[in-house]
Image 1 (tube, rainbow, N blue to C red):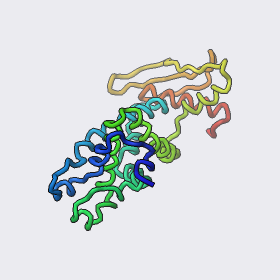
Image 2: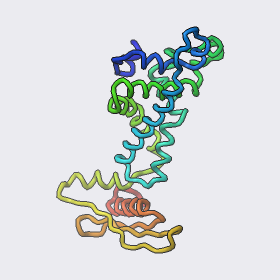
Image 3: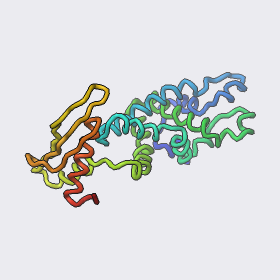
Image 4: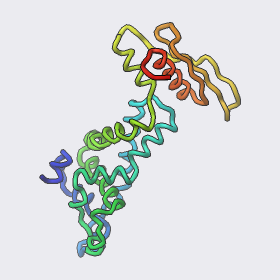
Length: 225
């Protein structure tokens, strides 16, 4: 099976793929001095961050700090290396002789950088949408794995339960706010239609909403208190 078959994308311009696979060690040793994948890593990293940020922003009702931590777990070298191993990307790299002998095909830093370059190659060849689809093939599975025990998104849990009855509506109402700007304290009620079903207090509105949803789930018997 070819790399294009493994990544489920066929390049219109194969030169983008070749450049994404070209490590600087190969470029330095080659008489033709082809461009390495280093510039593509830069853009691929930005595309990866945008695609993952957009997905988790719409998927999880969490505050900025939690969203940042989740994203960091996806775009880190360890995760990217694992993604690259799934498509056997290391086997396809163009490496210099020295890097080859030093085991560069299995070096996390080299292979994860090449994965970012591959994202860039898909983007340059086909635009953002196929690049996003490629990223989310790996990211969504990793998110489910990594967040299963890292945190519980109570707002999403509550919403999924309430959605089973389309006529019901959940709203979050800020009922209290006090303290100076650097140490605000927020109190939120979660209401089912007009009935209060949970309350929460935190130093952020998002955190208060999560705690209100958690209390609602506990009162509904969906969580143990």
